[in-house]
Image (cartoon, rainbow, N blue to C red):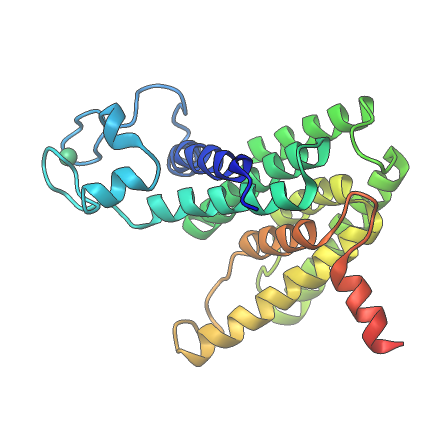
Length: 262
Ligand SMILES: [Zn+2]
């Protein structure tokens, strides 16, 4: 049976995606994310409320400004669809729970981080501070089943592993592969995921990176001299971990691995 709750989750997520589009555009430029209101980048006319409906607003106007007709990037509805989908998937996985709220907010931040890193090759420190604040709040109020020692272990594993790979990469490839921004993000992600899920997320992040780099090289979109941001892969790996886990500490990928291997 279709639960109308899922529709609400998708719509809420898509609406939040609309806000994330503003964050992705403005935060790296150090602009305020509150004022001024969203406006057309070309003719500066404020976007009307009815045209600001997530996904539909874009589709109804054919991706163009109502006033001057300039085309908007298809990334805007894509981000809205993505956040809607993320909210829906996590809602189906965790139900209306602390886990759902924490993991959804984390995923929203990861969407913003992934796109900002793609555009500018940076992970703004604001997100790291937000994450650290979130971690203190989570453990202070006992919102997850894991305790703070488990969180600290996860942070050390996730951040530490990225740091070592970064140092090795710089030593071997003679260029920055994994930056300090990725290491800081790893500390935050590990702090929320705990040790076991950190290992799963790291594994999935590197698997996504390897797969996409092979595909992009095959399509001749990149070559070995390209610098590739790692934030999007950390985001993907972490989201796939959340999507395949349960609040009781099970993970479908880990279970599948042990069923198949042993
Ligand atoms: Zn316009």
